[in-house]
Length: 70
Image (cartoon, rainbow, N blue to C red):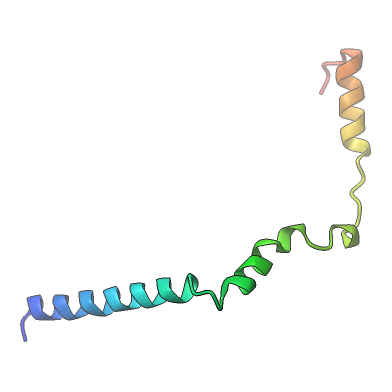
């Protein structure tokens, strides 16, 4: 077996792996799981602690007053 045959076998294995992974990702059975994962960043926003926005408010008030020391 020469290097060309080995490269051909590896290419075939990678092609089959790619097609299998693509089929798995786009199968209708996986769609609900992926839809749920896509919405995770938007879930439970109320449970996150609110950040102290006083720093942003101070910077905005400085800009309104024309203070350029920041």
